[in-house]
Length: 438
Image (cartoon, rainbow, N blue to C red; front, side, top):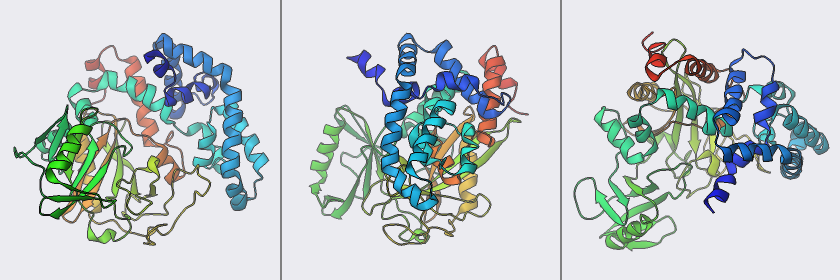
């Protein structure tokens, strides 16, 4: 059973049937950063992967064309009419382009729509885009093995440890009020019951907003959920204890955005995803920023891959652009105003913007063994606070919203540079001394 689950992990199946492990070996422009990243993924698939992973990659090549055809049919049926209305490109042409890009560049059909490859200018740069399956399952892993310390990896993987790590380094961070694990709830303040304030529950590890819940303190020891369910403090704590038998949770005070956000967040906490990385010369820079928002009033999270929307933010001014979703839905669109609340998004100027960027850079300096980090930062009434850091950030949100590939941006250049350093270095110490402190 474990072997079957391992063989059919969704992201690994996508990686296999995309054919990228073979297709990308034949890309041109071999000195370009995206080529270096794609090539590193290919080498990982064939040289360092386990026998199970190699078997899946080989099987994926057999099913590549049938899988590509089926996926292209599904997504053309879903998104084709919308794109035809927008561009005049007939669905059958969209289908053919998906097949062509899949065979030539290993582009999975959902990303044809997400990255708008139906637009000629975008399609010409398709080889420069970086995909989650190559980054999360190969490139990030290979870089971390040589560069990262276990302490920071643990802190970026565990939300409770992240809060402690940041507090110890005097970084503004949303605190953890309690930890629930193995059927027990431990309060940060040593008390026996949950704090009498609005609370936010989230799995201690994991991403994507899975398992998140909000509870509002109504007074007299009563908490209410967003669906109006009411529980006493003891009952809510008992429910949290039961949840923690299968998975550890953290409890945070439920914080709210700065008043300037108004209804732009649809009632959920909006966060800014700020990308920072080491440059080739060893400097920490901010490369991109996006404002994430819940798209439905009452949603507890703003995650992009869980139905949320997001807008690019200009680094110099802190002004947001038009917002959109992941891009592969039948009704995907670009919005100047929030689709649920009607609040203006395009042109919205984020408060405490320079402080937000400074916090991201300071956080990266505290996690100085990480090449690339995606920080989730909440802008509250008194300034920005770290919510979490992502050591393996998905670049879909960056590339979709900025409508350009990350491969030839500073992100791609940094990944390529440190992959080359990793390949050339004979040890962890040698690699770091080659670049750090320049």
